[in-house]
Length: 253
Image 1 (cartoon, one colour):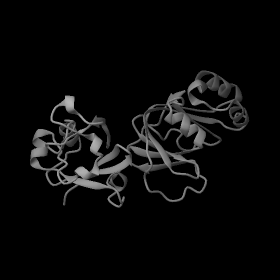
Image 2 (tube, rainbow, N blue to C red; image 1 turned 180 degrees about the horizontal axis):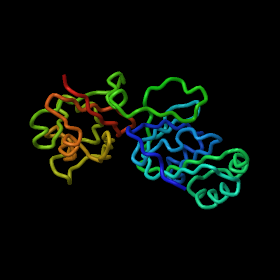
Image 3 (cartoon, rainbow, N blue to C red; image 1 turned 60 degrees about the vertical axis):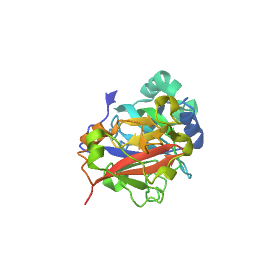
Image 4 (cartoon, rainbow, N blue to C red; image 1 turned 45 degrees about the vertical axis):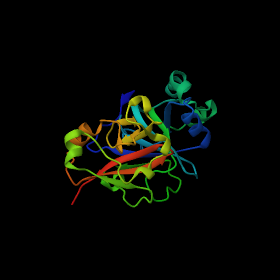
């Protein structure tokens, strides 16, 4: 098997799954997503480690988000080779043997995606109707990560002090975060953890220091530098779960 294609742009992937498989992913039993196809269509050689997936229930809502930890692709499959792959990987794929037997007769391409950082969500990228498609790709650019049209999104302006000290204040926005996640001044007084999925990484677990109205994490300085953030830019937060947020950057005017 070979590793995935390497392109010039990072992508966001929307994968449609049946409810039983989503349940297995969310409970940690299924850790490899498998796509076995007749033609070399996405995600075959179109997904890279580190890219984000949104897992959507067939004819239903978004249920989870995850990151591709490792990707293997192979073409020119034979029924014998598919049986070998099932033998080696189905403990983590959790696919029905009869499904593999049927598709082995005509499928010649396989993509295996190891999943990490699985998080339950109830929202995701706004997309056109999939009309039966089981996979969709979006370029990971400001059209998604800076989606100000999402009704629950909100922004925090970046100041010169934020850039210098690696802080981000929540002044005036405390009601946007669960009260249970607002802790005291010391780590011993920390509240429950929020999950922040920062664009292009990292994933951060933090609470909010309520007396100072700022995030306890000091990840911001390196993240600002990585994206060349400037005074007047904005950090945008989009809720994707009870205590989880997609975080992106909006350029100031």
